[in-house]
Length: 364
Image (cartoon, rainbow, N blue to C red; front, side):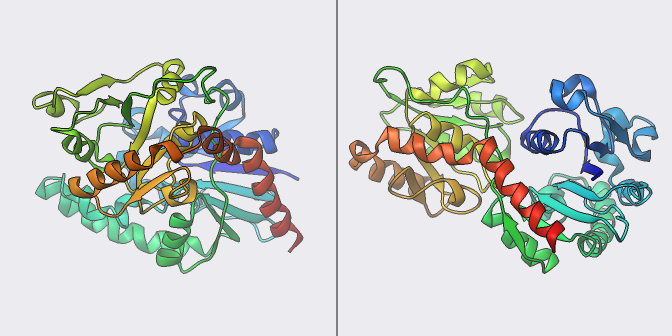
């Protein structure tokens, strides 16, 4: 069986690329197709695969400004010759599922999210554009939505990374999706060898608006509790201008240091509405409870009252209420049970569940 893997672009190793790694482990002889690839930024496993770029890679400046060529990507995907393949796996959160697959083949789309910037994040995205950019993108997004819905009909089976994304697939494409949560590399994330002090709270994320670091920092303003903020991004300089004395901006930390920060934290704060959210699973693997906004992918990983708590609104009062409730029952959280729950999200489980979907589609 010849297998093709389609991914929007390969220019770094984030959650989507980790999923592609697991596809390669399942199908080591698969060919990978992408709009633009930079092997120097990829893991040895991906960098060693046969990777073919679409016509987008030949456009001027595409290596650096590939996202600006969104309008060219649908046609570039449709130009790919996949006639020799029996199974096509597309990894979607940018344009990748719109390939044309031969009638004898099966197309399974693992969807991290429908393209956010043309669907539910469209108002937020366009609010940052000037009037000329907004006028251009408004026209482009309209055309992309039509193509996005049309190309969804070319997929035999959608596999969503969370129940939240499965609902998006239903809302935008009117299609059902099987849920297989993404793989989390849990090798370095484990319970501490000795009892930890667990003195501080922790927030781990990029410092960009939708991650809601601003909400966490304001919730801790005036609280007699230390907060560590791990991550970097466009908002960091803004936060430094008016930072509460009990909040420390650590910036980006080495991956080797992150498990220790989780292990010594009372709880992780996770206020964003995420597609799934790998950070809460990493924290729970270290036995650390999670205080999460009760919408989005966190509902797939956090068990309210057992591995953490949910709060209902993205505002300071709701988050502070969750902190108060957590501290009143903090001793009831079992670090070993939280760790055991997190191990359900490992890579081996992902490969097993995704393989079962493939076998069912091929058999049908």
